[in-house]
Image 1 (cartoon, rainbow, N blue to C red):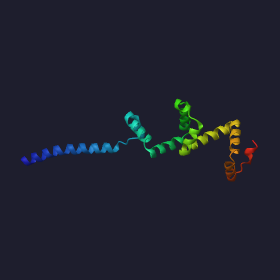
Image 2: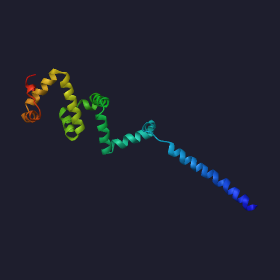
Image 3: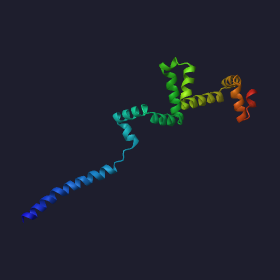
Image 4: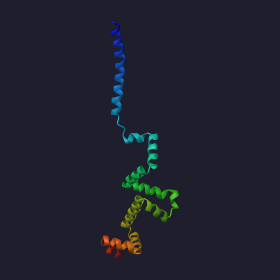
Length: 152
């Protein structure tokens, strides 16, 4: 009888522990944390942003993602032009940045092409600037028929 009570006691102790462990294991497996859930937490979001800003591959991936999104591109350009620290930036500085950062160069070219597409005055300025660089003009003419640029 003593053994039966001992066995009963062990079962009563072990079963709840196993049950609790099983429940914890099952609930932890079913909780799938989404990106939005991580970003809602202020501390986690700050850690994520800092990690991306200070890790070159993450930063490049984020910049590429942002540059492929028109809304992000516009927002970055607006912020850049409205930032007081950028107001004193000369075109030479931007050109230096575009030499080292291909996404910056692409953004500047896209912006320039967009302006030339909508403003005939800017288009004529671009054509004039290009004509003063014969190597670029010759290279581009080799790629496509650009004779129409001289006529506009």
